[in-house]
Image 1 (cartoon, protein in one colour):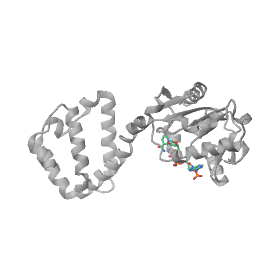
Image 2 (cartoon, protein in one colour):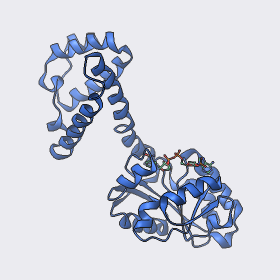
Image 3 (cartoon, protein in one colour):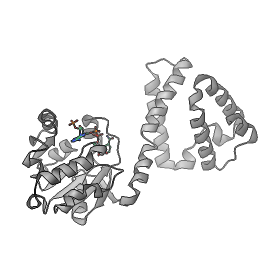
Image 4 (cartoon, helix red, strand yellow):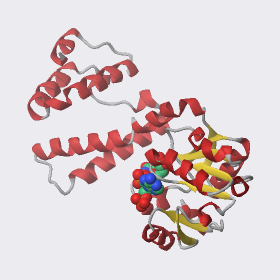
Length: 269
Ligand SMILES: NC(=O)c1ccc[n+]([C@@H]2O[C@H](COP(=O)([O-])OP(=O)(O)OC[C@H]3O[C@@H](n4cnc5c(N)ncnc54)[C@H](OP(=O)(O)O)[C@@H]3O)[C@@H](O)[C@H]2O)c1
């Protein structure tokens, strides 16, 4: 995000981390700004401060920053975090010092800084917090050519759960699917590419056709014999996945407006 903002002409004044080495590494990547440690007065010197620490560190970092600089320094500033599941009220120590607090969260998966540089432009961003902080967050999203929307602070866990339900779970299912493909004789080299193409088409269909029309396969067709054979094969190849299969099949049938036949209900027990 820092690198994209820098390239868009946003002045990046300081990049702070616990260790100066990490801050320097960030400066090298972003291409702008000065490396400082979190305990440096400059860590709170900019008018807008983004806290992008891991979620569990947010409360501690906010407390630490509030303690390390006086009221005069925080008054009029905007502090934003980028966590999708925690409301901006976690930054309350900084608000008590006079800062406007808020959060902006990209609905995107960012496994590395390079991935973020590739995929954070033009995305969808959830925003909440004080009016001044929301305005600043909105400006940043606009700079990144993204779409900003308001989120209910009290429902952020639900919002985050919605993201969790489709991204890390998909990666996990794809990995388990790869193992089954290998067992079936699919060459190791092509299995991930084949899966990526398949899942890519599935997501495209979801966006273009909607959930019900994008749904294909034996559950939608009512091909119960194939589903029974799946269950038998799963019992042998990956029995730990049976509860996952059962839960997904039930949800899928609800979406397809079909009832689970008695024979299958028994097979899933
Ligand atoms: N990754 C994603 O897909 C994604 C997507 C959307 C939003 N986000 C949000 O973006 C933020 C960063 O996510 P991430 O995946 O980059 O998190 P992360 O890898 O868990 O952590 C980011 C940095 O937090 C620093 N940190 C950890 N504990 C700290 C502490 N006590 N004091 C100061 N710094 C500390 C670490 O710095 P050191 O170098 O000092 O160890 C680490 O480099 C989070 O709010 C996350 O919710 C992430």
